[in-house]
Image (tube, rainbow, N blue to C red; front, side, top):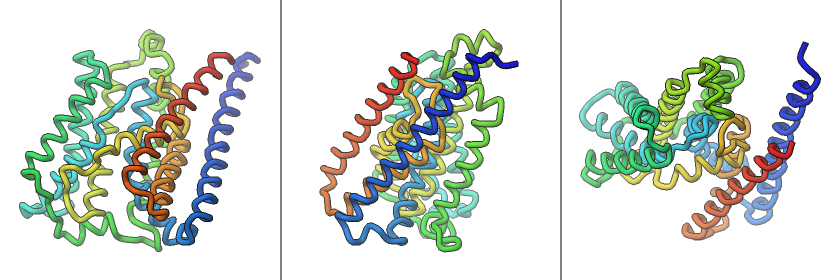
Amino acid sequence: MIPEVKLSQIGLSIKKKMTTELTLLIGYFILCTFFSFMSPYFFSLNNFLNIGLYGSIVGIAGIGMTMVLLTGNIDVSVGALMGLIGVSVASFIEMGVPFAASIILGISIGIACGLLNGLIITRMRINALIATLSTMAIFRGLAFVLCGGLSKIITSDGYRWYGRGYILGVPVCVWIMVIFYGIFIYILRNTKFGRRVYAIGGNSKASYLSGVNVKNTVISVFTLAGLTAGIGGILMAAQTGSGLPSAGQGMEMEVIAAAVLGGTSLSGGKGNLVGTLIGVMMMATLGNGMVLMNVPAFYQQIAKGVVLLIAVFMDSLRSRDLDEA
């Protein structure tokens, strides 16, 4: 029999998750209502498809970022990795490699870069922020070296279809994002790996003493983050029709903001992908609404920075509430 205290703690945890997601949905509804009044072009099916199209890139990368944050780590190299993958795939296609093989090679590079991050953090025992700041500079530099600082035009219609095509009236990118969320929500909720990710973020020392291989789990999480960032970079290049070495610049801020806004704690152990998905849609809607309102790009950056600050503040408040409980 489960003790009564345990049952109350579980009930409190479920209630807080539901409250966070409900609050986010209400906030999203208010945001949509505001932009509907500010622009006559906002509330339309085509515009919401555009929001999904943009949000899918951040959303897919947000899956890996959420898992990284759940372990109590952080990865600021995702934006640079997206740029590197986009340039790499465009270069492969330019060399005559079939687009399907180019995509596989691009995904492999993303996995390898994520694995590198994990190894540096766990084997060299370097702080995750410092380690990924270093690899961010490396990945971005490699992207510029590969293309000589110039964009690589993608001529493959088959490849560009992944970024611009539609299935049943919905962008292919959105279908890919939905599939990935379905897979990883199941993994985090119903597998030993998912439970280990949460356990490590809650208390890594206790997890180690319980027999969890903390280092290998963290390496796996960063490898998956490389996978999702790589797919995000592939879809970004497919959308723009070119591999840009500067692509993904600042994307790490949006991905982290979406995950934290969705309830994932920066201290680890708390959060879920449903919340991240809502956070992604909020960030994508904010960007879309500001564009429709003709807000200058510099002010958009300020607004996104403010949203990140609010997200971190909300995380701080949630942590205080849990400590008091």
